[in-house]
Length: 115
Ligand SMILES: [Zn+2]
Image (cartoon, rainbow, N blue to C red):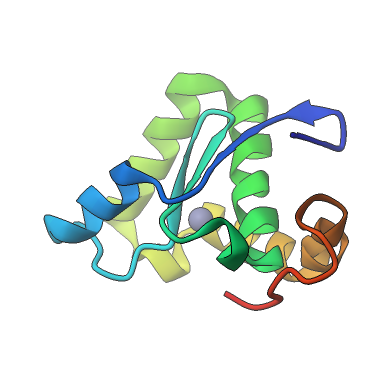
């Protein structure tokens, strides 16, 4: 899949996400993005516009910062603040709200809107 000229891979029914839920890292985890691969823990039909846009923002952050800066900033940020107040998550959340509607181009017109 290509969004705004950026190649991404969208994996649905991700075993990694299900595993992370199972071992208790985050029991309500929707998905995770590593590099340009977005992993969604649910069925393909349940991928939401907000989720795809949110995770795409993480792809853009990763591209801008590079591997080491991205993970260093993300992980040290989690030590300083919470997930919901992490600056990279706030940016992705806002990006998801602003850009979610145009994700129908990639998910189809029946894509669910909210997370
Ligand atoms: Zn996020």
